[in-house]
Length: 189
Image (cartoon, rainbow, N blue to C red; front, side, top):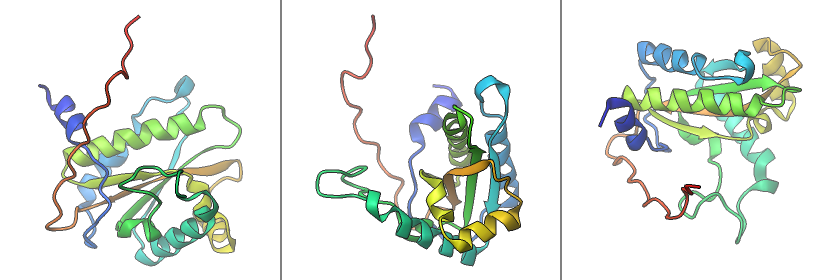
């Protein structure tokens, strides 16, 4: 099996991070992988904002959780039995990359998702843990978030689509084991 397939089969969402920052060289490669993701019409629309400021990340994570509460898990509605809701403060990841897409572009979410997956695969291949969190806009839905957008120079015609959390997996935590693949998901016609 080639190395790309091995990485695809190995990559899992990491939700427990060591507080130490990741290596700058690894971060640059991860970001480059995101920049080389396919995009609709070759537009290269997503913008990446990298925050390695612990206080900013904690505060945005708390804002995100507070603004996501109406959509969080309920008895019969959840993401998965193992991970029923988003985490407070981005699971403590030392690096949070927010991907922004153009508000009025039909494929902004897909473009950001493709970039995120490239980044997650690159991270795994470099021994960096990663996790993708959707509904990125909820982290900026208060005055503090709006001020950050202005300070970061985010254009008003862009919105936060998702966050990619990056960090070293916490020492002693085993790499997550994949769930068995569900049958009947590939139809050959």
